[in-house]
Image (cartoon, rainbow, N blue to C red; front, side, top):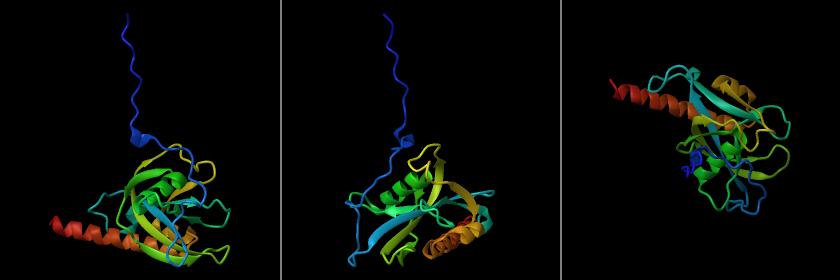
Length: 186
């Protein structure tokens, strides 16, 4: 009798559901009735690694195409649902739309805005996400393109003012952190 062969092991952290959440029945709304959306600015360092990074030229961000064939790009974002934390929702949306995973960092801020296509009001929350892994397959792979760009290029192509403000906050935060880290290492 031969020994039974064990199945190959798979780490759960590399498993991603290949279907995006749909529907609005679990959606969160604020006290004004505005839909709450969350998103991330996926980023990575090119060239030098922190704490040496003090220049935005050393940072790349990941932008994605809109599903609505509008001009410009955006950062991944979508609805925050009642069965998840705000950070979990931000990570889920980033995995679904951009196919990257990493560390969700401290919130950049909250913005109130109207949609471009209607007068619908939203409350948007944005987080930085330091990318650790880029997936080959993700739920919206067939409907979105993703592109790593410089901060300068992201300012040009991002279609939403509030996401551009979040980007400026991220760059400012990363620069300040790098300067503080450099001083503490002296």
